[in-house]
Length: 231
Image (cartoon, rainbow, N blue to C red; front, side, top):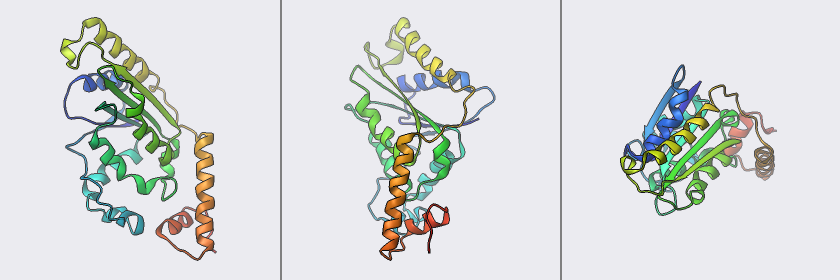
């Protein structure tokens, strides 16, 4: 099995230890590729729209985006691990997600994403994790990933890993490890009903645009994939 991990911070602190605990049962016999943001992150999207109008390969940040995106396409399991900043995802995570918009279902989705599984791991001092996970969860949904598991932890005792009590650290790492064990014998995911419905709606949209005589880059892609007819 192949796994890619997008680390939302370069600091090897609480998030790092949670992620490592999750990966612990998966390291033997599996290929794991990791990226660390913001070091591996692209620059802010400039809104040039060249990815939508022409090709994502012409994006001014393609050199940073392409390795991460190609790694995501090549693996079975995608993991995002990041801390909660002001109750939301870190800016570098959102910056990366912005560059994936061209592959949302309404534009040029990749069929490889339809069978992948994903895990989102976040931690905060004690604030709810749901809002911080929403951007990544939404992106996965529109990319066509049906199986997304979310793990959110409140550290409660502090923000420095070594300053947490041994009992607290053990509770956190055990929860992550047990979750990782669920993916040891992982099978490809199937498109769930909501993703299938979204795909069907986007297919109708592409067909309606084509009937108006518009031959966009998105139209041509859907025709090439055999999802709509070009005649």
